[in-house]
Image (tube, rainbow, N blue to C red; front, side):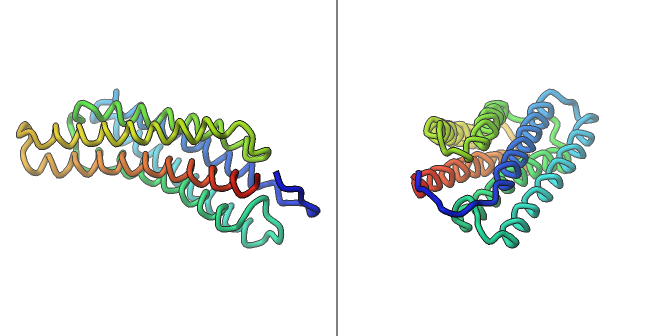
Amino acid sequence: MRFRLTPRETSFYDMFAASADNIVTGSKLLMELLGADASARAEIAERMRAAEHAGDDATHAIFHQLNSSFITPFDREDIYSLASSLDDIMDFMEEAVDLVVLYNVEELPKGVEQQIEVLARAAELTAEAMPNLRTLENLTEYWIEVNRLENQADQIHRKLLAHLFNGKYDAIEVLKLKQIVDVLEEAADAFEHVANTVETIAVKES
């Protein structure tokens, strides 16, 4: 790691960790949604909305700290990219839950639970990795595994689309369900963006 003669603002580490912990909360709400009946989903969506708002607050706090800090722990554009990608994950998860409620989806197609399980695992890995930004150690396995999970999510997404277009569902239902599984796929992509940014930071600081 490069030797620095100047001190660096360290509160970014805590804020990134808090953002990632909030994403774990969101992933647990997604898991909860799977086993909930229609009457319970609105309440889960409300809690997810609150978590998404907390994520927005955390992101704004990072941006504010970035704008007011003369010295940062790593490049400003990487801090901005990491914060934005973490925020995107939460936005996509909240959108998926909201769509399930708004569209009055009675039953999610088989395979959505696999999508959500991948997201939950990626959330756990991301939350475990964020504290390691302080030392930039023990991160290689993290970004390799998240990239593997994103590839797995791609395969699940393609199989879900094939299932939706097999003629079992009417056209309107296909449109509703496709939008939900597409948003969940975007969440998986956002996890990969976070991992790629962490890898970029590690390479720059090595």
